Image 1: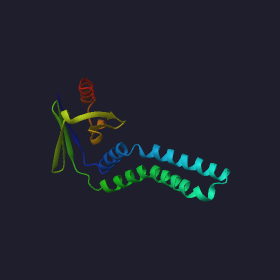
Image 2: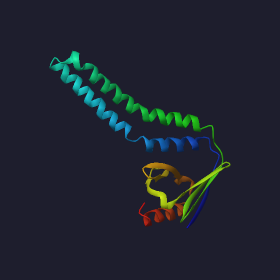
Image 3: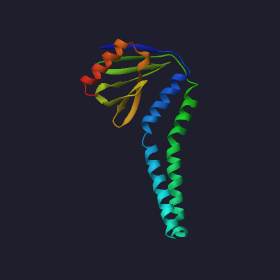
Image 4: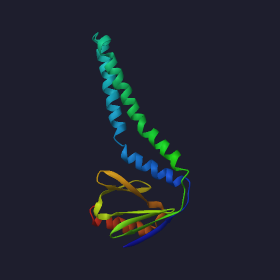
Length: 161
């Protein structure tokens, strides 16, 4: 297998990559924040109903605020990542073989061996490549030809990824 494709110097591309990687890294913050806020709201309501409000109100308010901050953390990080990385648009390329994924961006290059990849998740625009539990890189699906995308999909299925 030999898949090679270029990445144009699109100012929006680095921001999309940064947002996708941060979304994968921070996907648990939203649900955890919702649970904390819900527990805080229920606790606050129950404590007020039974007259325990003066002593326990600060605890419930802290849970509500912590939950709301946790919910807002992921979108805030994605917005910052998009803003910061949109200035770094350079041409690049991907070369994917049976052994590794090689990426080049401007004068920088790096690679990931398939032996270190633990899973690959599919999103509408990318394949997110995980090394261990962390997302390491993305493979942009819309920049590949349909034949190359099917070849890579079959390769990933063959490896159990």
